[in-house]
Image 1 (cartoon, rainbow, N blue to C red):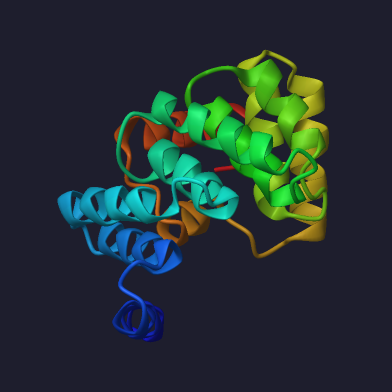
Image 2 (image 1 turned 30 degrees about the vertical axis):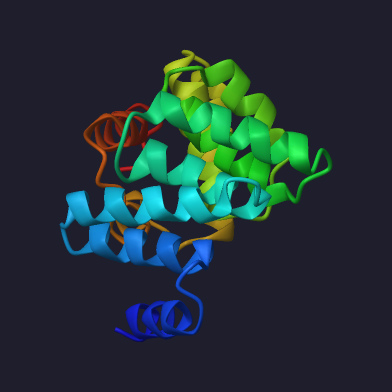
Length: 182
């Protein structure tokens, strides 16, 4: 509730704020309004076409929330062209997008540049290794995830992000099963 209120207040102050529209889109997805989410994300792109943070967030939204996951690739590539030494979370988003579209080796390369202290990074690394058949590596990363973040669950990530895009939901749930994270 506070998240929605804050985003709505931001948009009252500046109706062209791409971050506010991105947040509203993510909120709408979380309550099952995928059409509303897509509309809010389109508005965020309209106002944030040259904002690297907006593009990076929208890349993740295309992959995990609503839309064609492959459409997120040009968004994150554009974000990284605007800020070539972008923050680690850009690479985390890139890894998520690449994971959902099945480019697991590239996913792992992107995630190497992301925060290694993030449970989300570890989850996607374990799942990508599992999809590549690298079960030893998957088990090693999964063990690190369980040790460093004992309360982390894949379903908690799915619900909290939220992951509502069917291809992403399927890929994450199957990846969690393969990596023995479920």
